[in-house]
Length: 337
Image (spheres, rainbow, N blue to C red):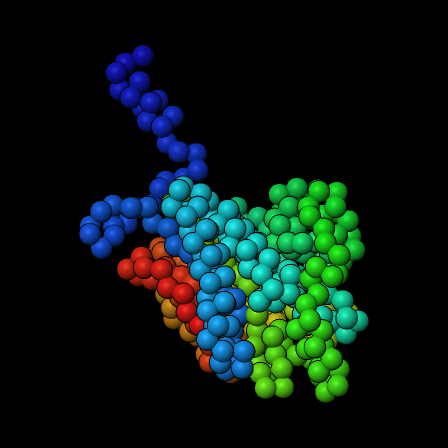
C-alpha cells in the first residue's frame, strides 16, 4: 500500500460519524461551533397575570432555566434532540405553562395532553395524543419515536406504553392546580372553551411550550407539548402533535414549533407551509415565517419559533406577546415576554 492510500484511509476513519461540525465566530472573532436554540411558553394578548411584576419574573425565571440547561448541552457537544428534550421537560414540570403539570382541564375535569418531536436529519417522528397520566408527554413522544415503527399513539394505549417503558406516571392530583379548577368553572358558567391560561379578563393566551435547536453537527430538532383547551370536548386534538401543523423539522430548511389556536394551524398546515416556501421558493426563514403568521393565519391566532439550517432564528407572532428565549444574531441570550 502506497503513502497516499494510507493517508486516504486515515482521513476516512477520522471523519465524524455524526456529521461535519459547523463553525462560526463570536464577537471577539474566536471560532466556535454554530449552535442555536429557541424556546417558547405560549403567546397571547395582555394577560392580566403579567401585571404583577412577581408573576412576570416567575415566568422569565423558568424560561431562563429551561434555556440555559438546554443551551449548555449544545455547547458541550450535545445533540439538538437532547437540547429540545431538556428544555421542554423543564417547562412541562412547571405549573406556569399549559403542558405537563399545570395543563388545562377538559370538560370532564380531567386532562388530555399532546406532544410531538421531530428530527430534521432522519425525519424520525414521535407523537402522543391524549395522554392522561404520563408525567412528561414529550418523553413519551420521544420513546415512541425511538422504539416503535408507528409515529403516534393515543389515549389509554399511549399511557400503557409509557408504563411498559417505565416512564414516570402521576395521578390527576399532580397535574391539577387550583388555578385550572377555577378556570374550568369559569368556562362552564360561560359555556365556552378557553385557551390555556385565559380568564374573562384574559381571553386570548396560549401557554403551549416548545423548543427548536440546531446542533454543531448541522442537525435540527423541534418539539412541542400542550394541554390543549380548557373545557374542550373529549377527544379534541390540536396542532402540537400534528407534524406539519404545529411541529416540524428538516435539515434542508428549518425546525418549527407553534403555539396558538390549533385548529387554524392545522387548517393551513402552517409548519409545512414554511418548510416548502423555503425549499421550493428559496424564501428566507424570516420571510416564510412572516408570510405564514401575518398573511395566512387570522390575527390573534398565535406564534411560531423557528431555526434554519444556517443558524437564523425567527420568533414571530400576531398576538401582543409571546413567552420566549433565544440566541440572537450576536449569540446573546434573550429572555422576553
